[in-house]
Image (cartoon, rainbow, N blue to C red):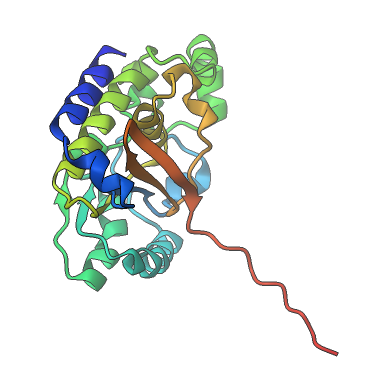
Length: 236
């Protein structure tokens, strides 16, 4: 992927002191945080860039996740400009007292005619395109909108730009969306985009963490944020 290769080469050339610092255990980290639940998530509708608000559960998820992410002491908060992402990031910004920068490159895939449709509706109305989409075709224009390659490239650029603003040991939280985050992760770790589905889906309000290494980004945590209910053990 030509555009992504160019970004990686430029990034390695600019951070000449990075490897020495990383040998001492110092590196930048990026958290990609999916927004909380919306009514369309609950009903299984393809949202894309339709500006759907969080539902009541989504707002609860955002508040709980914010209390966990605040413990990481982020230096920088950046959010997709879609409302569900902004409203997810707002509780974290409130806890930390940080401003939130908006970046449209963190939006979900623009899915054209598919937006608002359920998966069975898409499969019925666009069977050939749906098959190609499920197969991972990175050049398919989803619903006549964006390709996965285009989304991966803008996500790669957004993360790279955020990382460049961090101190050498800094952490940025980028609030984004499920599909775009998976594509961004695949691009950042060098996974071929036709295999991006090897990166599992992100649950609402869960996140993934990437750490900057000597030769690019390393996925160190994925789909974090939800913990099982503790088992109650009765002592006899």
